[in-house]
Length: 268
Image 1 (spheres, rainbow, N blue to C red):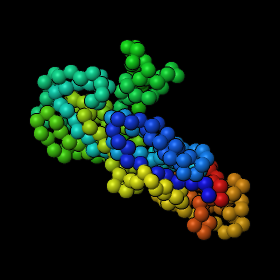
Image 2 (cartoon, rainbow, N blue to C red; image 1 turned 135 degrees about the vertical axis):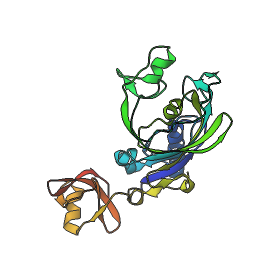
Image 3 (cartoon, one colour; image 1 turned 30 degrees about the vertical axis):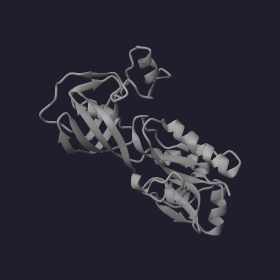
Image 4 (cartoon, one colour; image 1 turned 90 degrees about the vertical axis):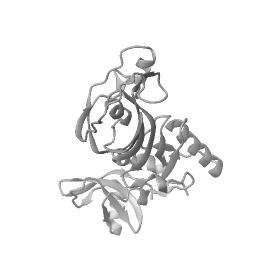
């Protein structure tokens, strides 16, 4: 049977998210003797560690439902220093300016993505411009910081925990504290998924991986309709809905005028 689901992968430092995807793809190919489609639901910077959702098989079609989940991070910020990349891999300069008090913003913010980021401007990644020494500036975008907590402080280093919306750059939050950069960054949670549950060898079935979405049980006739992409009666105030039949995930639908219209149909 074709593997379909999500790997809760504990990414180490020093490798890219693309490296992790390639590693999972290679492992599955060696195990099964054939190629398997593999993707991810949100990257981590090479220096960062922690939870990465790797999508296997038909789960790659569910990327949109996982990408927007809120994230939780633990970070170590080094004060009195700046980095051109916002992290330890950049060009570091000691300024010695260490604030007595740290202002940790929460709520809805407008954040400008850092110059060394994968955001595209004019069809080109910002980091490509920055590496050439060109101006690399993106328009500010709305993000939400649900919680920004100071855990400890020891000299010029502080421990922070951040709960934020998808698309938030934690190293930019750190840089905005003043003269500071992100020395360590670990993603500990993505929506309902926790780093302590990560297992690079286990594929969480897609039915379970999307269990944060409400479910609508189908009768046999409705299941046949949904498998052909046809809407069924229903409504939801929660947005997307799983359409299921006897423990099998047939589709994810969105409410439209009293109907649940499949937007992604999965092989049964």
